Length: 529
Image (tube, rainbow, N blue to C red; front, side, top):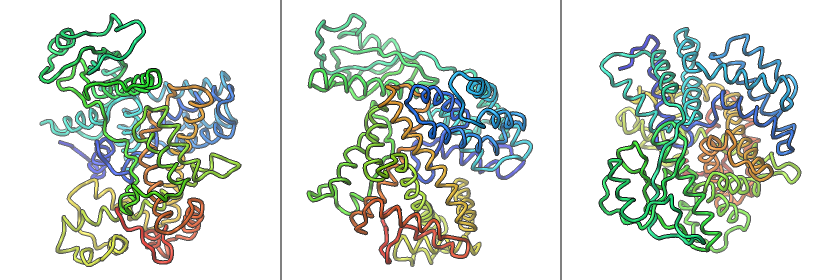
């Protein structure tokens, strides 16, 4: 049970749990990494710049973004904020004093980051969104699995003894310290013996040895038939994170097997993590790269598709289902091919961010309108009478502006209404803030692509986080491009130009314009957006 002083604390916890939930739509997902990882990313980027893998402009952008974030962050002291400003006045050079200073500050803040947030909550120096996004991102960046964190926080809240939000921060800090990255053993059982020049390695399990390993670690062996098995050793903080790390290893082995032998790596679709009670599926939850417009417009099997758009879909598929390096390379190639200025590839990140930003208000309003109707059918009859999702969104937006909404039972929905009220009250600056956050996620994806393809870096500090934050957003943007292509007959850059104009013109005098940021002559992108 949560013991709170400020009612916002309850909503902040609900929003935190929403970010850690297994399934969440793109418009309610985390769009960025935590500030500690951002410092580590900048530290790594300075070295990559010296090696020629990242440009001076890219690192300067990172430094500017970091300084802006730290400047308004309640977990940093005034002296720490001033220190960072001094380190990034100029682009830090690898192994220089400023470069090392960034690392020292990262180590200092990370030692008690969550406790710092607890103090900020106690002092009333927090907002719901900043707290939830910062804490969730920090914990995920640290290597915990979202489901593990969700279960841990729920257990704290369901305990008999009441807990305050600062105490929850302290409990999370203690869990972080007591669960360092450590080695886990994960069994991968193969259904056929792969081709190997020198036969099966002695370290692999054969026949009965596989069953013995499973039984010895408390797993049910019913239905397990495997001539050989591999025991993978991975680093993680929890058993769920170990399963994810093992999936990445399996993807790597599967790719190498296919190109080396021309045959797939055949395995039982489960992973057994030593220390867990149940096997984990070998295919994790989707990264969320959904382009539903292809289905809505019945274009999946269209033979006469645009070559450029169709090629982008094929590349985008890697972002959904391939190993992290292949996902980043394929995903960025799809974005760049459709949205980059010929003279500056990085512009694709800003162009896609513009499209996703313009999609945000309608997406949130549409989904919320159906939940509102379900919770309060009598008070929301005008929503039922709205014939299209566009009209539903406009109706709900007007109800928010008029203060006519009944209170939603879910705290996460209450938080969404508060965000929308702020957005509709002054849409220009709020949409620019959203665009900036989403754009930074796409620029990070581009930097990861450069590190992989130019620097052969497959272990960048932000590789996993980049996929976690960008994948759903890329899917949302490609969904808008697909609608623009098939329904509005617009090329991707024409759609971007339209979106740029819409963002430039929307203001507090016409807040309902937020619903129509991507419309053309009354044509409505009505689907689930």
